[in-house]
Length: 273
Image (tube, rainbow, N blue to C red):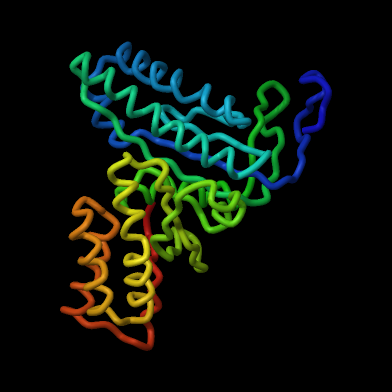
């Protein structure tokens, strides 16, 4: 907010700037929390956030808010910082899960979504209770991307806007789909960041990157039989690639049920998060 002191901040102060926003969330947290007492819930969440929060600050970001087990963080220096933080969080999660399993607890999974865009950063609330927050359509898309990690069964998704702001060759990226999220007509290209994968999964996806891209282009051009062959070839090399499995199933469904070539546009429209 370009203030010298917190004492200079007033309700309604705001500034507009481009930032990257990160959303992360624990998978199936409601089910997990039902098996714990209130005390255990708070101890678990604080243990987890205690691992993740410092990673945001270490990579030049700041936490806008904790939403239960979810984290919303902002990065105003570069998109690289946001994606690097996401990768570090997933690496830290693997180490955290090793400790959980040694203690007899089930491992946890998280999803992370990152988007970049112009947003209004300012103070919201009323005279006796205000907080810093951001207002932007870009915030909503970041949250939707985090939700889409469940559909694609991949830990980290970024938007095309974020992809375009990243330093070239700083990360291994695979474009995976064209999606119109809930409440939006215009689609966005979404990408998964392979740096966040285990070394085995990352190397397998990198080895099949060209074949996958060819399959995706054929799919978009309604050549579903040829596209299925390309995706099937990917699966032969990396059987646990959930994104490729999804495309094989899509091709099979389209080939068996048929489609209208005039209206089919390759866009996945999400009615819900």
